Image 1 (cartoon, protein in one colour):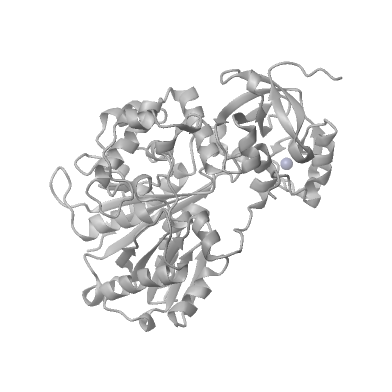
Image 2 (image 1 turned 60 degrees about the vertical axis):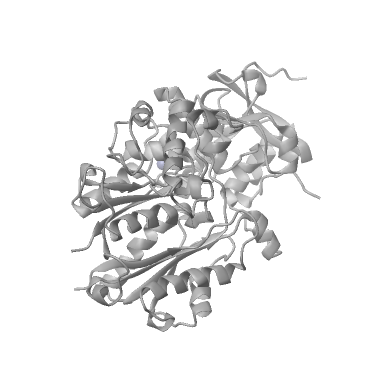
Length: 389
Length: 136
Ligand SMILES: [Zn+2]
């Protein structure tokens, strides 16, 4: 029986300013992922893309043409930012049901400024949000997550300083990551004294958009000796939950801020037969620190409402018991559209595959990755990864 | 020239927006289970699409959460800053409504009254205020 595993991966340089032509940038990432595995494009028979604003619909079909291949499995994952973790599970299903043997997962996007420079076409609108939120002056994800942070303050007393601590710890991790866009050390005070974007969120709590590309190779673990660039990583559990697309329809506004991560995480952990206490390393989608905090609560790392005081006294870097986003996360590296979560995902893959050491000794063996989609924790994916044995 | 963002006024919501322009705020409710549906949801998942009607919202609402926007990348909206948006819970049906919250409410008043106001480009929106609206 086939068993899917991640064999190789790549993140391109991320750019805040001008970027290479989009498809050349994506192709370069794919070729690096293939080169690390000693494969040529013709060895690939499966393509999974993460929805891209710039590439538009059927990004998967375009990429197969760009690579000059003729896949037997091909799909574009369109769960907004929840797509990266979802894409991994689609790859697993396709490999294990023998629809394909070697699959490339591809994600990439451009900043809005760069999209306008590279093409005259305007990004397509999102109709429900266009109709019922934008006329009110919504700042999209910024204002939705701001209102989520405001409600966390109101219900649980979570302060600006508590949220800032997440940003500061992730920045400590970014200091040793040469791919990070933001690598100056910062203190809690730097975050809380940065300007308010949408109250209570400060500028340093808001992810910066970037242009960039990312890719992963997933194959049958039986091919590991042939192609793995480190230790193959198996995909052990998955969960997905859409709990409301628009903020006005979000269940979390009436259930004490329990997001879709609670159900998705529970299902993923059960499927993997892993308890939350057995997770060694976390890749938590971090468009804003409040997103990380709610995820840690909903996964059961800390009880609902208690994450604020908990983060103040917990070291979230690689030297702590709960390493979260140890490359600095999207908050330090930038967000490449709906493929932003590839930063969180690839960091966990890299730590597992390169046998990085835990603070307590021993290797990282079990990782948990979340991806958030939509403007208001609308759709959530959780995937459990393990060193394959 | 950049225009102020306005509702699509899709076929489904044309009446909703014209009612709003006339000062009447309506919410979608399933006639069978009496559960409010968010704008954009076209069907009661338990009872189908034939059972939905638009009903006059209560005047009173409670603020669930809010945010004050200090700057906006859209040039017209940026001229309106600072302004506050939020989600309120309408008292009668319990509908959660995305709206503007009048700056006069401050950032901590929870009891509000639902009214309408007309913004640039003749766009009428739901606005929560802290005091009763006086008709002129
Ligand atoms: Zn019903």
